[in-house]
Length: 600
Image (tube, rainbow, N blue to C red; front, top):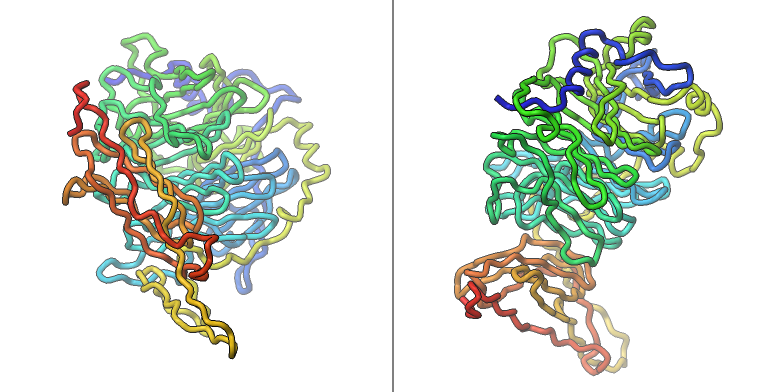
């Protein structure tokens, strides 16, 4: 049988479940306590009855804060009363911010004090049946960029293509010009997970190339981005390992390599398979990156909590912290973890592994940097129950913007707030009045990446289909008597340079004259030995990374390109701009094998 993880943790939760009250002594008058603070529903549309009391916001995919008085959450909505969209917190109350860009299970990534991204659903009416493929998926596979109180851009991609957007489960920004979004495995036979990278001007596909594990969470810590993945049976890998890395580090823009696996994370007990543990929920605190995981299924390993500090990972709760031979079976797993600013502690939200038939309460506990568990409690509290507040569902999301200031969201979209009596009084003061977070946003621009057609009638439901590239034909009239001169188009590709990174990764840099789709294919004689996905790049300097195998080193490279805009032209007499492309470039030789210095 699998060893238990953290006797104190489980005993505390058992006491909570049995008694329904917070563990330990009663909180003093000035201590922080959890209480239900549900926002009022927005005015309903015409013909819909107005709710007389607060209701759940529906499934909340994410809750994130820029500051204690500037927070966001994204919801799928609740029937006709709560529309799908984004809500904002101003320090006093929550209010509806946008009726667009909601999601079934969306994510939020802050890029600045007035700029953020959301992982959102595609819009109904943009999908249609394909040739034998049915309706394209719409859940969590588009992006919205908010700035200055507006949705300034929306990004999607036609369905049923090799480079179609897949569902995304994680998002984070190192800064406003370095944002990442990750999700499902790439489609066969590709190896890797779907990822998009925003570099400040262009959104590019940039998958993790070596492991096909779905990306589930992302957090920024000490100038780097850390992403956690879900290990599942049948995941495709270039080099299968007994214990694949479950966390990757993404370096800032222009730092090579882009991805680095986090090794030596203590997770498993004797006899535990890596796929028995669910993905790690992440949270960045002051000098520490927290990670919490639990059983991937209803029966499996217990709670694991690790911390990364000063470059090393340490297990606080898990099989390596308990004497061997103990066999307690937990009944909960972590759903979120949130480091509390100003302390060395973190809060953990948990849900039962087996759903009960009656309404469930939310479970939450505080964990110290030494691995001790305190303040384990169920919500609503006994005092709130005496006031008539019933169970609101298990815990789902958690965020702590300041010391003694945390928010917990249940699976049904109810919000509990941890703060002190003084903190609740302060909420009645001056709220954040930034206009970027005060009004209601109702307009979402057309999706970049999908064909844009101006019509005078509702469009046919066909954007999910692959469309032919637009025609850019036509002629320009010249004025009478003008001296005729020939003009030539600039090459789509120029300034090609290649180099090897870490021996087996080919980096190809190039310049694109206009937006284009491009794919790099490596061949050994006539056989394809490696290839990148088809990327859509804007004009400018770009790069591709291609993982190669030493024993199947390519003899030539092919670039498949397709311009998505007309190429600019220059006078044939101009000497300022070369119109010749670098058609060939040197393919680096293969690294030596077995120390013999020979190429394969």
